[in-house]
Length: 219
Ligand code: ADP
Ligand code: NI
Image (cartoon, rainbow, N blue to C red; front, side, top):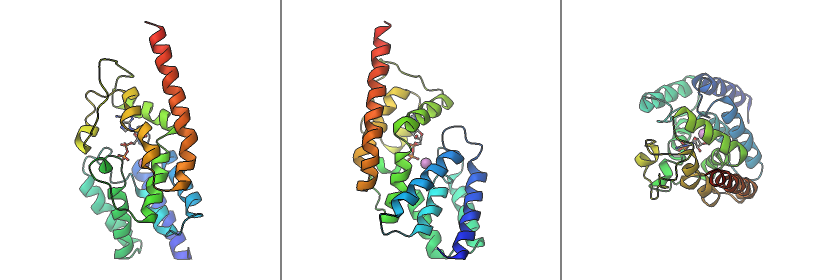
């Protein structure tokens, strides 16, 4: 990365932090930093555009429809900002392409065609949704959205669309394990991410099984 890109990345990081530092649903600065850290680790193993990958990692939640009331406006603001700090139209387009198509919700109805740079950003984001941190984020998100912890009368939803996935009226935190968390390991793009996911996946199963044992033992 050249000096100009290093300076631009500092500005991008500040922009993302300013947009998301107030988040209390699991998408705050600590999430962004973990995604960036994983992206850097993966980038050492794959031939990707490091500047685009780190920029997209910082910015991936800045235009999210579940976090912002007007995601189109967020995208316009982001493009304007990136232009102002000197990114080319092509770089802006590459970043926007990645962050608008990498989300789990987006991928429910069609698998996005991400290039390798986009794929490692997606893998990094999805890895942060599983394991001990993933469980904690799901509980935190569910609490913020007034979900029940668990209700055996509420069935796990299958064949979710983007809209039904975002409808939290009949969602429980424990059902979210089946609707997203347990599915991630097989949806990851790179062997590197799949290797990290194996242990995290196993830990979530152990947690889930223990939860159900405790739940059923107190009936
Ligand atoms: P994406 O932006 O990739 O579609 P999600 O919205 O699925 O991502 O997830 C962002 C974070 O919020 C993840 O850690 C995820 O597990 C959590 N999350 C999303 N939906 C729910 C839900 N209904 N209940 C609990 N946690 C959720
Ligand atoms: Ni994210």
